[in-house]
Length: 512
Image 1 (cartoon, one colour):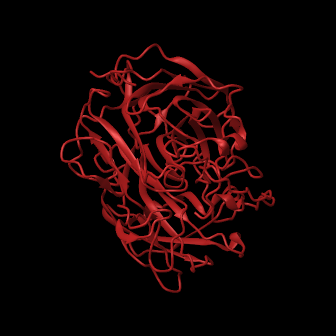
Image 2 (cartoon, helix red, strand yellow):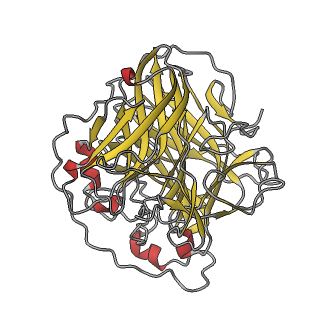
């Protein structure tokens, strides 16, 4: 068994230990010769207004997850008892949003706060040029084919995942493990091998643990601070461990921060100095994240020349926390800050292998997904030529739904609750956000209204969020039927000159 292991293109805020924004702006990204990247002045920021009271229609998440009956787990991914382990040995025969990955195990969400446009382009993503992966591979890929299982090579001697993120200016591919990770009353362990070459202007990886099955987990770095380093869809509650290069040196990597998120607000723990470990392009390091409700510790190794002979993991960074949840979803994310702008390449590439976590096997859930739209277009941001749309335009209620989407073969046996998880985009215009309503219905039944929660309002009123939001919507079980289920969306009170959009749509059923 194998061993585990868009509008504003502003400069990135460097991580703690990377000497601040001015130093990042002065560094020469790889491939740029002696010319530093252009410096774009940072506009002044304004703290968001006081939080708005919770709208009456906003759903309240369960106060605690359903009880778990421990199920014996086999060893795997270097764990003595692996509740989840994927060594990427085989290519999925039935493709979902995650391409070559098994769609029963993985949910892929693609984040990109680029504007949809009135001509029908909805969240366009440009091509990604691939390195060598396997025989008969394409030279370039678009969403739908941007997650590949590669053949063994001299650097990684086993099948492994290659993630190619063509979305520019805060683009990301987030790979959520559908099985929840339970660490109640213990210190749990998340393990994976990952290519650890990174750069703050180009790309990096992060790991999120979110209480909800919220797609595209990101961060904003605070309501009044500089937030142009991602402007992503900050989850309602969770933890994000972000990695970075050491002082922009792509031959070293470190933990940039541990971000504890509550009600969509960031609270960073940053190391006083970076504990840097060697990295090398095409090679993987072994990373372990140890999680309890009181403490998070991140361990890592230098890259292994042969992809398997790792040294003993060392503590890279740890922090005391106070997590109000003990079960969540593990999400691996590959970020593309702006490779086309700063380096001329059309994508950021990362490789993973031996992804797993320990603990009880949580099996009281079922998930179903809607494919992304995958409509060909042109003109992705900073990329000339063809693109692929991943979102669905959501029309105003006066026009009626623009499309009817279908979840296939839904099993309701033993169901106790249901949620709809979506990645959404809204135009933040000069109208009260409190009046924005997302309306959704199943099977032609009654429309359900979802206004922004207090936390979502506070997040979106920080305009660096760029309109991107991860939303989890409650679904009454009476709206669902056994078998195929249709879902439709419209909005009310939302500007349509740059129309709202949704993508990465999942239906999550919890059972008794």
